Image 1 (spheres, one colour):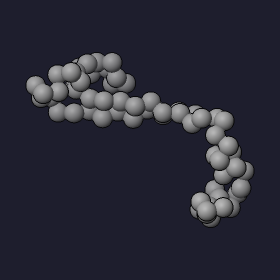
Image 2 (tube, rainbow, N blue to C red):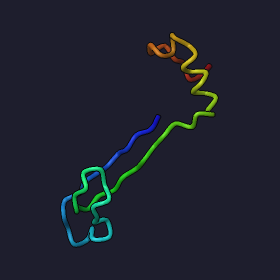
Image 3 (cartoon, rainbow, N blue to C red):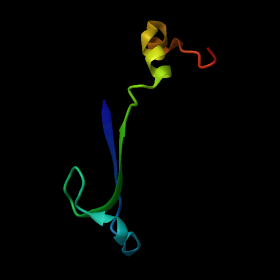
Length: 63
């Protein structure tokens, strides 16, 4: 499971270092991107999804 976050910026001379077309829209525009994915070995997450009440908003981080 993963995701991509892209932020496209208005063209500006000060953003020349961020200019490029290596993005999901393949447009030559300044911007930044982040690719994220869940660490499948993250034990706290495994415990969280194992509890149906937690998935319905009943999670208490102090447990």
